[in-house]
Every structure is written in C-alpha cells, then in structure tokens.
Image (tube, rainbow, N blue to C red; front, side, top):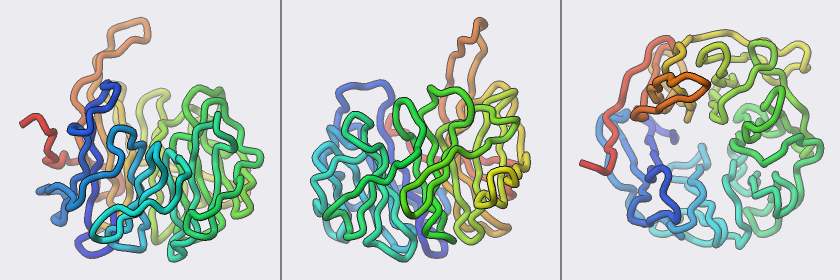
Amino acid sequence: MGPGSPARLYALQHKVGRFPVDPAEVRLLVSDDDGQSWSPFPGELPAQQCLHNVNMDYAQMDGLYASTCQGLYRWSGSGWDLISPQETTLVAVVYGQPQVLWAVQFPDRGPVVIRSDDGGVTWTPAATGLDHLTGVATLGIDPTDANRQYAIINPKYAGSYLRRGSGSGQWETMPTPNDNTVIDPGMAIDGPTGDLYVITWVPTWQLWRSQNPGADLAQIQWELLHDFGPDVWVHLLAAGPGSNGPALYANVTSIRQLGGGSIEPGTALFQRSVDGGQTWTTLPIPTGDE
C-alpha cells in the first residue's frame, strides 16, 4: 500500500504451483479506489521468468523495486532500471532514506540479510545473530525507527519465528503470542505508530498486535484482535491508512480438514479490515482466469 489519499494498492499475482514460471502468468495490478477496481501496472515486469518479489519505498508513489535472479531493478516512472546485479529475494527501504536498502538473499549465497547505504551499489552483511535454518520469508523496517527491523524466518524451526534487528545488523529472537507459538510468514507494520501485526497458527488462526514491539524482550505485549477459527488459512499482506485507524490486508483461504493433519485448501480471497481486524471484507480482485 503506497502513499497518498486514496492510497494506491499493488497486488503481485502468479499461478501457484507452476515451475518454471510462465511470464505470461505473472502480473502486477494497481488500484486507486480502495480495491474496488484494478488495472495492470503501466510497465512490464523485469525478468518475469525469475521474478522473486516486488517491494516498495513507502515514502514514494510508485517507488517500486523488483528482486530477480538477474539483479535488483527500480521503477523509474517509465521503465525498470537495473540498479544492482545483486540477486535478492526481497528488499525493504528505510522510510525517507531511499539510499538505505535492506535485502534478503538465499542462505547459500552468504549472509541471509544484507544492507546497502548507497542505493544498491555496494552491500554489506547484516545478519549477525540471526538464527534460522532455511532463510528469511519476510523483512520489514519500522517507519518510526530506521534502526529497527523485523524478520520472519521460513517456518521450519522450533520456537519463535520472529526476529528483531538493529541498524548495525545485529538480530535477536522476539517472543510471539500464545507462549511463542508458530506464526505465519506474513506480517504488517502500521506506519504512523510502528505497531506490529502477526498471525498465529495455534490453536486457531488468530490476528495479534503488539503496540510495544521495540521494548525489552521481556516487556513485549501482544493483544488478540481476531480469531478466524480453524477452517481458514490467513496470510497478512500489508497495513495502511484507513478511515478508522489502520486498514489491514490479507489473503484468506478456506481449508477443509481431511484428518491426520492434512488439509485441502480452497480459493484464496483478498480481504481488507478497516476496524482493526474485527471484520473482513473480500475485495473484487481479478484472478486472471475470467
């Protein structure tokens, strides 16, 4: 979700389960009316056959970055410019400091988190103490504090999946709700307040918020905002300005319990909450099949 009023929404879509990726099935959509209608982003994506992610500078309209196997691209307003040959899986930009980039790379390529202070020209390791097994799924920077980063590691690790980093690249393990239960790789940070939102899996899919995620680890508190129940799978996507506080966005997928721990997923619906996660409404985003 970008800056402005109404804020522009971006949605990166691709067919799930296809490999290699068909470039024709990857597209970036935009909405300028709170998700009621969508249109293609005015510019073909770079290296679509190996596009890892599209992220943004939240301080700039259309401040988009594309992480690909060919390097890191930035949207210029009329096209995509290659700003670094460094392969990343995702990037995060310090709010108001576009030259300061944090990025994730595959763990077999070196430190899983790296940092650039010159807009991507050079990179330095920034993963000291970051405990993980198979890499980082999500990385975010607190807009209210440039020296505070959050990461969720890929979910193949016992205990908390949530990490907190400092501007020096030093990381520590954060507590999660429900006595350090596992959390989904999606998270959202509210820009004006720095509040952190996560989704837990156990005992049911639940939305939690911490209003003091930067406190000493033993003092961090979590508040349960909504229980989705056992029959959905929820992946947080973003937070942004709303009429009554932050608006939250998520993919919500219905699931059918098959027994023995197996599930059958249904259709993922793109949903928004404008009341702090209490109620959710499906947005009519195109699927590409119509």
